Length: 124
Image (cartoon, rainbow, N blue to C red; front, side, top):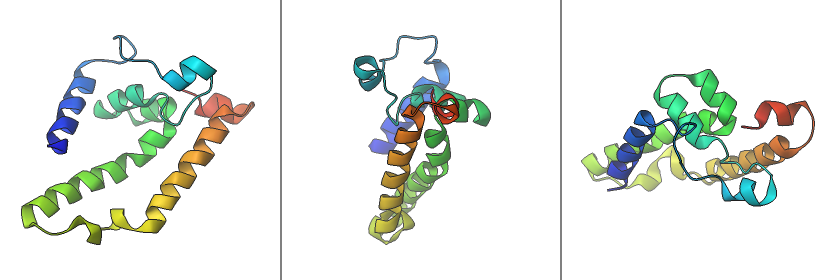
C-alpha cells in the first residue's frame, strides 16, 4: 500500500513543478525564517524525477544524497514482499545507519542555517 502511495506521489511530482504550483510551504520556514532539513525537498524531488541531479542538489543536498538509500529501501520492500522474508535482516535496519542519518540531518540543518558561504550553498 505504501509503495502505491509513493508511486502516486512520484507521478504527481513528475507532472507538476512545485516551484510553479501551489504546494504547501514549509511551516518551520514560514514561522521562524529558518530552513528545516526538508526545505526544498519538493523541488529537489521534481528535479530528480527529471534526471537533473545538479538542480536537485541545489534545492536540497541532503534529499539528493539520500535518494539511493530510499531506492534501496523500496527495492528491499519489494524483495521482502515477493519472497515473504523479514526486512529486519537488511542493511536498512542496522542501528548505525539510523544514527548516521540522524547525525547527518542535524549537521545539515545546522550548516544550512549558519551565516556564511555554507548557508548560501546549502539553503534552498
